[in-house]
Image (cartoon, rainbow, N blue to C red):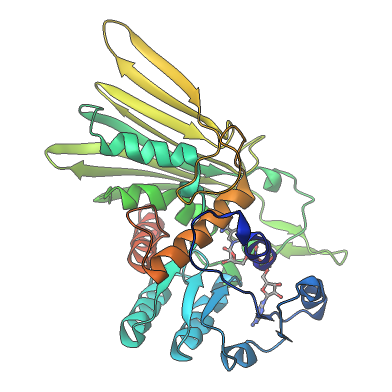
Amino acid sequence: MGKEAASAFARWFMLLDFPAQPVLTAVADLSPTVLEWYKQIPDIKLLTTDYKELLASDVDVVYVAVPHNLHEHIYTDVLRAGKDLLAEKPFGIDLQAAENILQVIKETGRFVRCSSEFPFLPGVQRVIKTVQEGIFGHLLEIKAGFHHSSDLDPTKTINWKRQTQFCGLIGVMGDLGMHVAHVPLRLGWKPRKVHAHLQKIYTERPDGKGGMAICDTWDNAILHTRLDIGAQKDIPMTWEMKRMAPTETNTWYIEVLGTDGGCRFSTKEPKTFWQYTRGKEQWWQKTDLGFQGPYATVTGGIFEPGFPDCFMQMFAGYIAEREGFSNGRFTCATPEEAVDSHRIFAEALLTNV
Ligand SMILES: NC(=O)c1ccc[n+]([C@@H]2O[C@H](COP(=O)([O-])OP(=O)(O)OC[C@H]3O[C@@H](n4cnc5c(N)ncnc54)[C@H](O)[C@@H]3O)[C@@H](O)[C@H]2O)c1
């Protein structure tokens, strides 16, 4: 993800009327091979295998993308070094770690946000706007999810995301959950009840050295939740986070249905927004939105947005909010939203039956 971030900064001139320019000057990674890649970036002055050296330099903001077991330690070191932070999800390996990070944010007063890029896509922005118009009547149900499929291959080599000691007891929820939680939490949809169905499928995987290694994380998670929105009580909201969803390659989706209307968006159709209306007849209509992120770019309106675009929009959201010119546009997940997502995942572990 560090390389994705570097690529976003390298094409910053795409943004229109954006009066702040981040410059990538220092990178820390344990792997000298990984550091080698960054040598092609002209503004970098420091490449180091010791992140403390980076924290001692004059950088203002640090983006940290490391395994989950290291989040609390490195995030709090960044804050205590007087730097602002764009933290990767899930914002700590568990709820306790997330709360500890939040405590250090309060103590240091640094500006911190958590990574979650899909809500910056035009289709998701339209979902948020349409929901906020309040035209759906009584909400019937909300479904949101994030699906991967490559773990269906039993010969896929193990990595840290498939081992509880590095990824966390919440498993797939730590890996994919913040992506699912961000929009519902931003809309104020905090479940008051969570009931989980968690699955572990393959218990070991090739270790990449000719043997097998224990694979002990939850692969798939379905969270059935209930929430109240004003006078509307007991609305079912389902969150699905799956590493084993046949044929799905990074599919993020949301669907909101009410008595009078509804909408849906999926990255399967990356430019298409669907809206349901109930008149004399009931209709699903769709429109192709093209390229319209919250932060305007030089890219023509008819083109399709993709992962690097929403990732860059997320960084634009971070910088704009930090510098005070987001002006009501969408911004990154807050530390409080990240902690709330952890509360829900912690409850899921307790209610899994
Ligand atoms: N926003 C997204 O879409 C997205 C996608 C994938 C991963 N992530 C998150 O990004 C983070 C990293 O995931 P990844 O897929 O990039 O993992 P990765 O394993 O590909 O990369 C992690 C890097 O951290 C380095 N590292 C480990 N310990 C270090 C240390 N002490 N000091 C410096 N560098 C160290 C490793 O050498 C490695 O290069 C995780 O929190 C993950 O959940 C986010």
